[in-house]
Image (tube, rainbow, N blue to C red):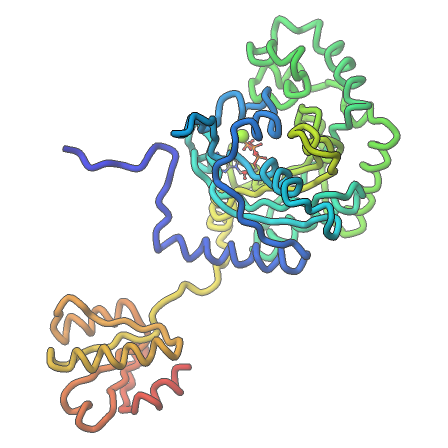
Length: 416
Ligand code: ATP
Ligand code: MG
């Protein structure tokens, strides 16, 4: 019988990689603290309805990618494919509108999408998610974009590009829809099948179709930013002035769209030149009508989500530092089997003093233990009958080879 394997599109993140994740997560937490965002832990599954209404029935996520199942109580639940809808649900349910506005929330955790797995694209992946809820000022959009740039700056990422667009609002988008449909209709028959079906339902999505023919057809399509209403134009200009003020280099891309009614105004991505096809390290924007779409009051919001796998991949490709790899400082070596209990006692004392330490549990010889020490630690602390008699340990610096006898107290003071 073959041993059971992990499902396709999932990965085990093991010790030689997980320390990098801990580093990246720590930096996320630092930036969130500095920007005044509070961490939240939300459920990994929600009512399916939340995503149908909060992500959108015509999106790839809802149409093709959700892990949906009926639980034993007969309810349809879905493993969250993203966090924004849950954040907005939580804001409404917990009456955060009564607290300081905007409510600034962040979270990190696994998301689930049934996609074709490839490098940087998995069926279970981890997202960092930031949302500012309750404010419509373009300066909040600026803060969110700045947050993502600052995060990547601290992680040492280079060669990143902020790609920006505005998708208007339910006032001006219908105008643009018509302009776009008029532009596309002479070549309707050439569009790919998916885009033919999008033409009436969600024509903006045709702009981000990856098929070469659709790309070619939309090359000279009118830009949504040319059709914005006064309010959306002012918002976009204010954001752009702000980005200029903080020295952000931005490219404008009319193809960057989110076609649904509750996505409003700002849409942005940060792309890396070192990620190949899956080039977006984060994506975000404004969604002033999402709260209403899930049955709540009007709550403007803006945020971004970043895939941590892609961040780690980009950092590796660029040779960025992940800080220091945690390693044992000390390996306690028992010179004779009879000294193992004393070795264990020393080990415990070191650990209580926050000195990372380990020892052998496999009954290895002295030579075997020294070898293990060399592979795992900076110092070997040898303890045997003569050391026990003298009340000391022999401390060997494994890099320099120097050796000295120290009491446990001296050892702890030296290493702390
Ligand atoms: P893409 O165009 O790459 O599919 P998306 O528009 O579906 O991205 P969002 O829903 O905006 O992505 O999610 C935000 C971020 O989450 C992405 O920029 C990416 O870093 C990450 N991400 C999205 N889907 C996956 C996945 N299947 N595997 C790994 N990371 C992902
Ligand atoms: Mg996707």
